[in-house]
Length: 197
Image (cartoon, rainbow, N blue to C red):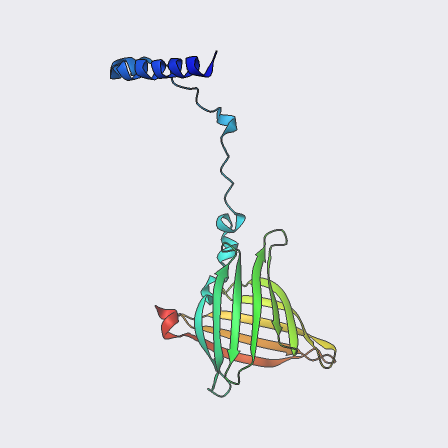
């Protein structure tokens, strides 16, 4: 078939289709629908959305001002946000003196425990694990490592939600020789104006 004869045939075909009534067009066979197996499958929901343990630490979310319970002075501000599809919490701390630090907090469903990994600029690192106790407080225990001295101590953090929406954060460190626990920091978290919105 020449190009000219092909063009004439194509035009004739289009003219025939244009002359059809709506009823005639409705009788034309439809193209086959895609095979169901060829359609993309919806991914299963994230374990972070299914497992309620991922919400155990949500009471800590928000923008906070933190007061030292020992002397009543403002210690700094802290912002806790949900990240990675609600699979983890990110902490961003700024003290009144200008020092900063951050932590990642996440639930491991395989181990059945929460973990916090904290770092700050060249001073110390904290790595603690645990979960909620019977009173609804988050209790994590592990080690604190001091960069300058090269030493590590047992370390424990307890976050207790209060009825008024505030949170007590109680850090304790164990003496390397006696094993006795002593206060490292005892703070009260209260929502800032932005955090209350």
